[in-house]
Length: 558
Image (cartoon, rainbow, N blue to C red):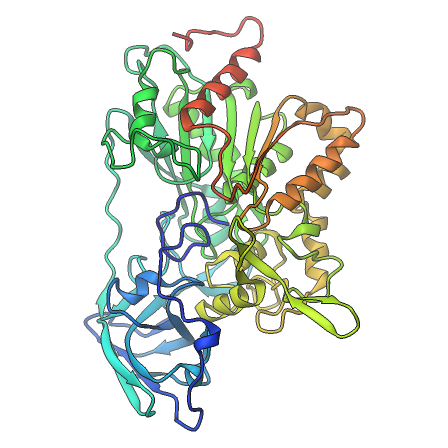
């Protein structure tokens, strides 16, 4: 899952509201020919041939722009690969293109609005010897609809129902993101990773946003504990500008607005810590998951060996384990636990909120070791049910695994959808013979490749299995450091793997350590927090104070 409260439309969590075209409405006279799109780009938009992915987006409404609403619950999308397409040359999108949530032939007759987007790939020669085509950027978080250098067309009205050819001219280029501006409280840093640069054969950067405590400038000799909140953007949504939702606690998330957090941050009672978030986009997803990966490269080593030491030097951060706290939810919840397990001597505590699956027997609703198909659940002699992927807190299924898999198949081939399922494959899985991530299951049939599943487990990405297998070594170093939180009706069924981890710890020995587990009940979903942002900082600060070794400076307590 993507990190909480994301504003980027195509990410799994926080998708923008959109017009849904339910499968039940996908009926039309199949004797009518489906439309055919001829899409080309101008020399002014891009002078050189393009290898990339063409996405044609069809919506019932012209605004917001259809490209900005692409999601599993958004407009219809259709995709084809481009292989050195020249300016002025047309790419064809017809009924042979993979479509979601239906084929072009199944679109009901009527008036629609169409927009085309071209995701431009770059050829890279990796240090492991593989040469591949992927979308590269400078490390900032961006999805294909807003990625600098990608192309898009105007929105045009079309009629579907009588066949024919629709010509679409792609004339616009997306500008690069502006640089973030520093303030009194918030500082931005770009760090080039030499380890990742060597792997990718080109400069790779990781961005950090640091939130400084009250009195930082007035205490130039003081070093501070750090909270690595492994989401993106400014930590804890900090802002000095009041918003319309301020003054109340969000009933769904349990957190306050960024301005209310700011008012707490500057009080005398708030622990003096430095909070840091990271941006580490890879060619396969807006996050690397902060671990070493065959497909993404050595992001784990880059974070621990390069990024954190640089930040600790720049911002006067305590360079000892007791002063380093990890916190994260969803994607960053998985990261938080993975980093704590892999580096138990380096960090002093981990607050793990609704993490992506931490036991692959509950890869959401799929047991990737025992199940043969990710799409269906067999029961009885002749029956099977669709395997759900997302639900409401009342249990209503919104997406199935089949639907999300097909959606990702539209956005990209060879694992290049930059979406959730293929993100996990890039992080956890092996490299295929073609140099791209080897899929865990076929995105159109659901058949699971158990060799890939076993690779994921054997290389330590099933975190419950990794912890259990290595408990005699890491267990003594984890006592007092693990804190888990999940809603009992997590939208993506992520609570199930947290239950598995809890059961494993209940039976742990040498040492026996059950950790802290807090479950939101009743009907708490994926965004649930057990405390406000300010409440968490106070908890983390108290944890650090309790574990300061004798003789260590305490001048950060003021």
